[in-house]
Image 1 (cartoon, rainbow, N blue to C red):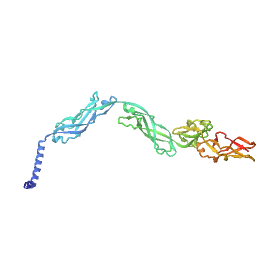
Image 2 (tube, rainbow, N blue to C red):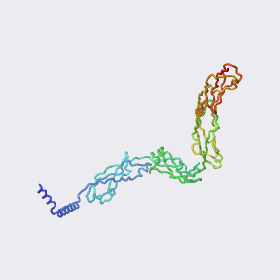
Image 3 (cartoon, rainbow, N blue to C red):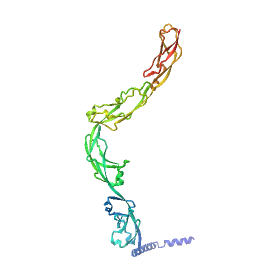
Length: 411
């Protein structure tokens, strides 16, 4: 076995140079034969674009089209190897004439070779698609009002108060499906830190109902921009106050007051703005004797002079929550009740007394028996038992729900 392996190795390594030369010569001979015989070969040219022609056949009818199928095809060709191996997509002309549009909105695809010399030497075997599918739609015109939206900010203390347009409407020509999508036409106007009136050319932007920008090559507009003249006024922020609006019914309190906005921005002439420091709503609100929550919506325009406007929402919503006062009962010990005009008599208070106070919960929670001074007046009372009123000195902002009596014994 070992001798056999040695013989094989010797045969492979013997005259290596001659063997390499022999392989090269054989390859050259094979190439020469191939080039001389030039055999037939079939190849596929991929992604050849389809050119749509005679578009006027559609546009003359007031229609537009859109290709809905693949706009590229693959072409299988055959011919001499020396010819087909050099072909590319640029050597073919692929067209679809809209003059040949069928009732099912398909157009035949025609394939040809651009150069006649090549066309005579190759054969188009097949193509990946025979027709191009299109969708036809009517073109319509519609007129839209132009709105203005500001971007950026004017100089500090200045805001846009009014604007005028060089044209208020624009006519748009587009396929019906696109026209239906248009919800607003907006002139985008940049304020650019201005502090005085200015005029600017502003681009028109189309929006759908969702606020998305609409762009399509089929859209034609009578104008793509418009001149916008913007008037700037000074701005001043002032507080909105409720003022004196009365008090609720006895035994009730105002728990909280809520304003939808406690400040408002005014826009107008600087001299007029100097005269306005605040807006008080007292004349329009009265909660006297009220026992339930008070609500009202007020238009603040009535509070400002002519020549001044409110920047933003001019209405304010008011809610005044009214609820019964809280109560708290405090016990005064009998020995803490002072006796007035006792003289030489022996006077004894029979028992402790309970006092019910009414007021705001947070005030009541701070009061204890030590904060209340209680006394009885026994002047001119004879010996025996008497039911006398307790005189109370209580803290501010609370009241006694009912009078308190206590029995005293005089000896």
